[in-house]
Structures are given as C-alpha cells and as structure tokens.
Image 1 (cartoon, rainbow, N blue to C red):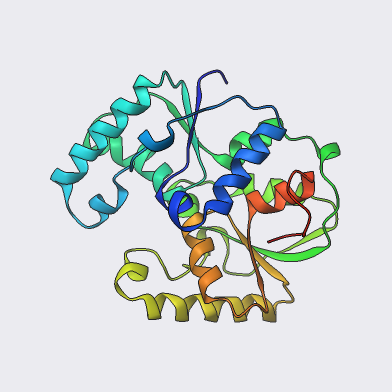
Image 2: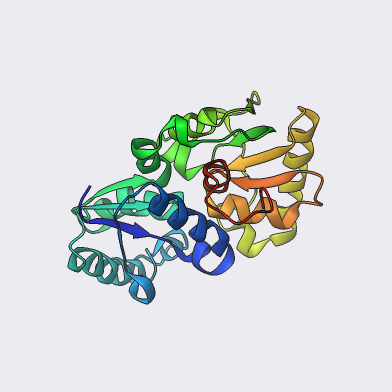
Length: 242
C-alpha cells in the first residue's frame, strides 16, 4: 500500500524500543515502503480515555488525527493493540472516523512474507492473545499464521486462548496503579505456560511483552512475534532470540 504510515506507540518508543527496531527491520527486509512521524508522532490518547478524561482525550485525538492525515497516509499500521483499538473503535465513537485503514503489524507482514524466506527456529512456545487485539478487535489468526510459518517452531495452545485468553495482568490500569499485582499475575501465567512444556511465551502486544518481561525470572523466554519473525528471517544481529 502506498502511503502506509507506521505508528510506533508510546510503549514501544519508551519502554521496549527493541520491538520498534524489530518492526522496522522486518518491514525494510520485506521491502515495505512506509512513512513515520518520528518525534511528531505523539500519543493516540488511549490512557486518557481509559481514565475517563474524555475532554482531554478529544483534544489529543483531534491533534493526532490531524498529524496522521497531514502525513498523506492512506493506511496506518501499528504493533500496539491499545493504539489500534483506540484508532479503530474509540476515534469513531468519540470524534469521527480516522479516515485511513488501520491494521495490525502482523496483518501487514503476512501480506509480504514468503515461507521460503524463513529459517528454522527450534522453539516450543505459547502464543498469548492480547486482550485488545483479540477480544476487542478479533485479530486472532494473523499472529498464529506468522508463527506457524516458522519451520521447527512448535505452538502450544492453552485451553485459555483466543476468546478465552487470560489477561497478562497489566491491562485496565492495573500495571500503573498496582504494579505488584500485575507482576504476580504475569508470574503465575509464566509458571502455567512452563507447566505445559513451553520454553517461551510469544505475544503481539508491547504492553503484554513488557509486563511478562519484567516479571520473568529467566526460566521462560519472553518474546514478541516481531522478534521471532525477525530472527527467522535472519535480519538481526547474531545472538539468537532476545
């Protein structure tokens, strides 16, 4: 798509920049042309809306929408389900439709990646459905399809997946207000996934990734689907999955 705008989001920009680097590396390796707002990106306003600050959200959303449209974007892709949910569902409800197609990173990558470009990764992993991406936006298959394309990677499906997926513990403001509780939930989930025979948990949300990563004791790998695809394409520095 011409005029594709890459939206990084606050969490990947400031908390887990390795996911932003993976996103860009994969798109460039696939030859996908994109635009990026850089320092002018700002915030989608999601947190303001979740906190009930609708007046403040409306102001931020109007400014953000104007920046996106002024970039000449025909489509927007983000890896952050929170941003995606805000653009696709909340902007039309609170303001007006953004005016561009909004898709998750995994949907865009699927359109361009070829199985022949992916190298084997010996890994047993659980794919963890983020709440905003799954239940809110019904994006369940694209991340799984990408992971299933990676040779030698074995996906383990817990009973609690897709619509029945559990929360990582960070959503709904829990991480911001009750960090110890968020970490405890994440640790319990990591132990559960380990009991299923998984070596890693793979998600498709910077916020889930961050909560799992900071809660992990190192016995379970915490990865994002972007990191897995990047490693399988061998477009990252040596050192394996990080």
